[in-house]
Image (cartoon, rainbow, N blue to C red; front, side, top):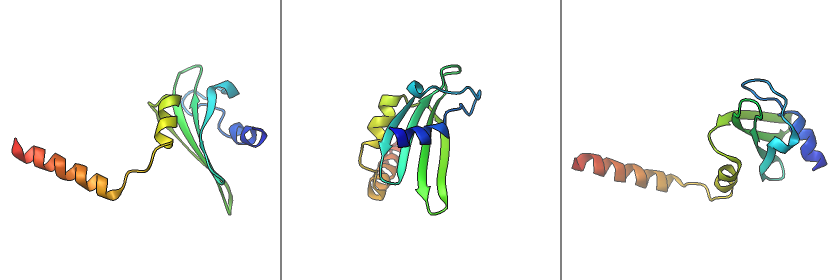
Length: 102
């Protein structure tokens, strides 16, 4: 957790209200060798955020975004297999067919 603590120091303030978050409000959702995803919940304004941290040749890159996912939902999503292009096309075709039937 020591290495994760260093990463957390970069994302511990809320992007909405700038409240400094405590470690108990930040959870690791997914972790790979060079990438970590955190879910954070601001204790003041209750804004949930996902932070994506990656180690690159040029250093540490961080991107954060507000989300409506809670920690458990985020963990489930990142634990699943990615959606394939074929699956997206199939959903599109099904929706197009349903629309044309109306």
